[in-house]
Image (tube, rainbow, N blue to C red; front, top):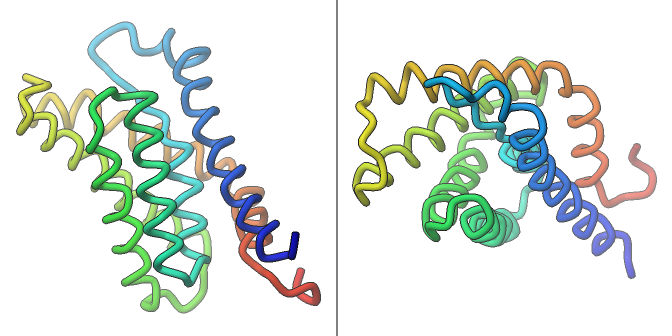
Length: 180
């Protein structure tokens, strides 16, 4: 197996690990916190996808990742195929389209990109669920009890894990042996 294929397998395993940790965090830790009206949704997989999207230049590969992991996330966590399947590739193509505006990847840019991505994804899911009549929560309840706590939790987690995730995603994208 050549080095490019190894890196792609590494990227897939990286996202799958985050996919698994999403469910593990929700089950083990956040179930005790989500007892009242506040709902915190961990989005580690989105975090890893945003970090990889900022570094991968092949748009076809990004769309493939978005569709495959969107279907996987929908089938495992939601049960409604289409929410992540549609929104994740759109999000990844949007990030890829506007990443030329960033001079250099740094924590501030990536934190703001992740914040906007998470807001877009959660709002899109809410709108699609309202359209499909799967939720009856008002917009204000969604913003107050779901979007706000989810954004806060995930931004704090990204802030804590930024350096190892950024280094690993940078390493997983570089193909040449002379680069670190």
